[in-house]
Amino acid sequence: MTEGTEPDGRDGGTYGSTEATEGWRRSGAARAKVLGPITERMLDLARIQVGGRVLDVAAGTGEQTLLAARRVGPNGFVLATDVSARMLAVAAEAARQVGLTNIETRLMDARTLDLEPESFDAAISRVALMLIPERAKALTGICRALRPGGKLAAVVLATAAECPFLATPLAIAARRAGTPAAPFGDPGMFALGEAVILRAAFERAGLREVGVETVSLQRRFASLAAAVQNCRDILPEISELMAHQSQAEQDAAWTEIEQALRQFETGDGFMAPQTYLIGVGTK
Image (cartoon, rainbow, N blue to C red; front, side):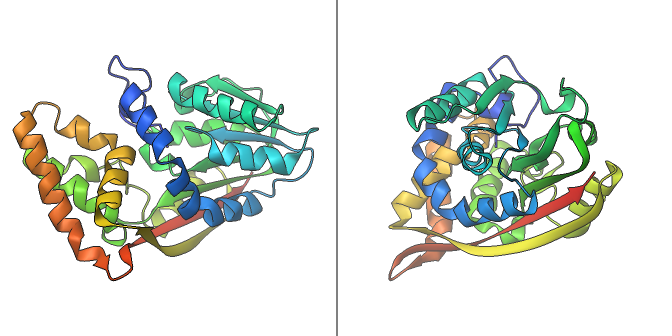
């Protein structure tokens, strides 16, 4: 999940800074735990098979890239694209560490995919599509790269109401920064959060047999403190929203965020509901 705001001089925009990349790296284990089953379902829907060629758009640090690479095997191929060189470097190193040689990373804006037409059997995108500006261009480019009959499967967040663990901190930061609507527009974290909107985006790109599945789960952490740290790690938007605020104001915002998230404390730790959509379509 590293597409997002227009590049502003930093590598890859919102998710391209060193701080964002390190936060994304730190949160890898927690992310894999919550997104593992959803990712496997995404790969199932994309019909990723042994020997296939897979395009991973806005791949970030590439956990789903590695899973796809294992499915296609040594005779298959996965291309991970992203606007953040730092994120892709993490993905490439992860592939090296586990001995996967069928992965290539390529710095590329999702809106201008410079790829051979009809050169991939499947395309995937995990928790990123909603953040891509000019999304129609990106989807058209993905379709162009797919072979006839190839599938695109993408995981996106549901509505803000269905994702309070993310929406609550963003709302607090935006209100304190004086831009309360900023995190909830399009592109934005919840821009594809309704099935009808996701379906329409796929269909406008020319995909057929479009389907949308809903997956609801619980974000679990050992403690409230661990949950708040995870928010710090995975939501660089908050630092961006609060960039012009004083350190005291930023600290106050995080104190308010912690208090707001306290509602999800239980006797067994922290537990907040979260819902995802998985869209799939065929070229």
